[in-house]
Length: 224
Image (tube, rainbow, N blue to C red; front, side, top):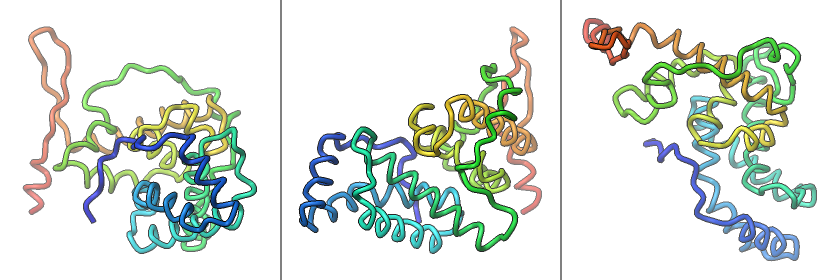
């Protein structure tokens, strides 16, 4: 399946979502169908990036909407409906991963805030960043492959922050984490991805001695 644009889509307002939620609660099934149409592709993209399997991602999204409909009364209307759906999707996808790989996956609810506080939050980026590579058709699959090597708690944050474009606060709400934890996990995810991507890049020096990183796909060519 060809991925949609990784940018977060904001084609509908929160007020529109809330109106449809109210209509659904009042018994209008077509209102919930509209909510499904608005968010199914985005949720599928998130689940597929997390699980790296189309069929499993489809199952996760389907179960997300079932649970959302069944527990609609638990939706707090002071939060975004889209963020609530993303949270259900993440939990559902990670639960499925835990069943497939017992003992290796953890819930996004497990907060490693005390550990993350020891990490630097603001760092100087070198280009191109892993999140920027996602927009390159040639290297997108390489990044997606390396993304699967990250621990799920780092992978989840990277997907929401750098692929879907959610803010730090939105990501914290979606994953039930502190802002500090989101920032630290984003830092760790980016650093780990850059380490894994080093072999695909070579360093060259510019006139002002400022290093610039450019793609190097010679290894792939030699392998082929």
